[in-house]
Picture (cartoon, rainbow over the protein chains, first blue to last red):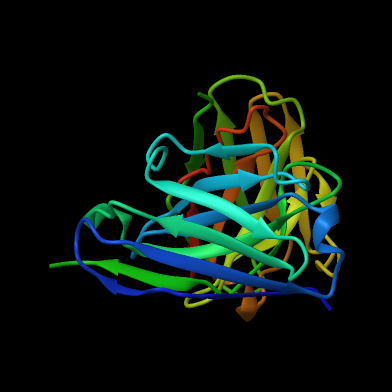
Length: 119
Length: 108
């Protein structure tokens, strides 16, 4: 079955960095766009970034552009999100999600990893 | 940017009742609309895509309708496990600048 398992979250000071990982299994990783979506405590969902099957096409939300970098290791079925210049308002649960082959919606989600930015 | 607005913010219901959740787009999104369910402490789960197609394994009591700017998620007879937050999402815009609706909480 499809599994997405995020890791790498934690407590970091403003201006710091973290690298999130998402281990994918149960499907052909290289056949799907992948995405990161975040949710601040008690708030709604906010899309963060997309990466294409080849990794050559990448998009970011304006709120993270220039600070976050999405990447993937196709051989190891891993998705990454490098978070730099972190701000307090980046505090959120970060979910990786699979983009469906039927359209740009998200058909499987990981359980999320919490990033807390605080001094 | 297309803005998705959900109403009401909170829906107080009883088990067995019919729940109707609304989602409005600031401009036409045709039928490129998905719905997700999120229970406390869990990741969202895809319920509906293409405005009306149920995702794999989703019970038939969940149905979606609408096109253009007005969409509805209906839960025909609420079960205890359906009390959750529901989000709509416009999909298939390119390049993707994805926005979700603010959510509707269905509570007892």
